[in-house]
Length: 605
Picture 1 (cartoon, rainbow, N blue to C red):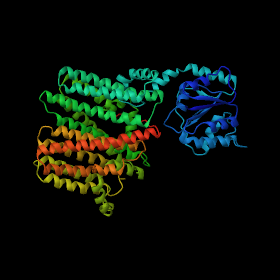
Picture 2 (picture 1 turned 180 degrees about the vertical axis):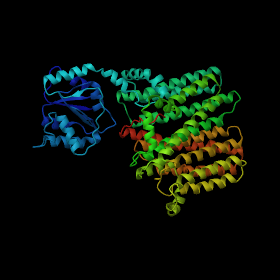
Picture 3 (picture 1 turned 90 degrees about the vertical axis):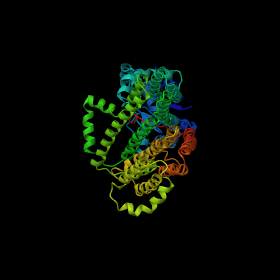
Picture 4 (picture 1 turned 120 degrees about the vertical axis):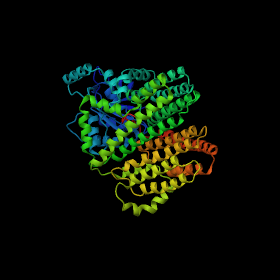
């Protein structure tokens, strides 16, 4: 149980002790710095500890934000400071300084908690200070100030602020105006009944899988039920994040589940639509696979661009300035958010079209909408990259190299091409990645199935992809390399399965691409969580993007169409087993050892 040390003389009528207990703290009283240091030493090292001034006046949610957020090792608000186990030594040192003879870091500060915070700042510790907005957190020095602080607390509805802060600050139009106005109350209902965000996330997944099953029936009633359940799943998807923000229940495992389940729900629904269409005599597996490829590549563009520019120096451009100016014009903000077809708009469109039309029309609309939004966002990011004068860091280059997912073949060839790569122009990496990928996809599409040319093109692709990563990816457009690799591999599988022209080949290809895409998403989530890329043995075991492309092309040359379908199925199962087992092992272990809690407030997925 976390411990709160309440310092100073208790104030008659104060509710601070009961408020701390309501937040889950075991409260101990200390009269001064010496007592506080003694009590601090007695708190087990694996427990969170907080030092709070007994005169504190403020909203309960201000205390919650300052003292219970699991994402930050050190945090403080006026009159209170807290440390998680990872930062206990820093807090202990600051406390010792305040209790030592002549210690005081900030003698003009009357509150011991605030003096400890000042000492932590002086030591260079990273102390998180949450944005309180209209919430009150103060240590009044006299009765008049206390009365004024209490009046300020009474003037602000703590619960209304808490509900409002449960909603993402930046979200899509559909989510903002059609989901969040009521899903926040569902989140509060869940919090008051002890439900966790992970439980709500799981409920959202189950609902989406049932929706996919309804779509797979191929009946009009099934399609209508699928559309309704898909919307219900999205409501729960919004609720889990709002519940996490409402109750500050952030975790590494929760962030991973939320992100991976979003992808699993959407792609399982694509498969359900394809199965339902097949029951009605319409084969749309190629469209379903194409939609998954396009959506995955869109996400990789987002991830790569953000990682390339996450900590770039002089990261400004005229294009970015224009975008900021457009954001000042209210209506353009919502138009631009809708154009990118975020998850709310996308799922609403899929649900309505599923209920009212056919799977084929649904996929056509999805492909057209996603292609337009991908063109819009990618073109804007290319313009930004070309017009900004930014210096990319080694960390960004490492992240892009990890996202590239190069296997042992590319690594071996790249070592021999490093000196050559250094002499080539800055645009070489994305150019050769695009040309090599386009060549292997075009060759697979334009030649007969079973012919040798796709294998020749795949060998050339190994060479071009090796050249693309032969030097650090620090160029202005080098963030395009990972999405070019993703498109090349996924589209090669799609085209060869379609060219095989045998029943079951495209569903097998869908499974293989889904398994490989999961590995690529898992890489992204590890990087975002500062956990590094997946282990090298995993990347080598599943071959890297160039190795898998080469193997698939070789199988298409060496096997009959029926054998090729079976080989795709075996590959899909093998890759899925390897990446899922390792991924689950990693994230569960990270959760058990207390990895830092994370929560993504970035672009709508």
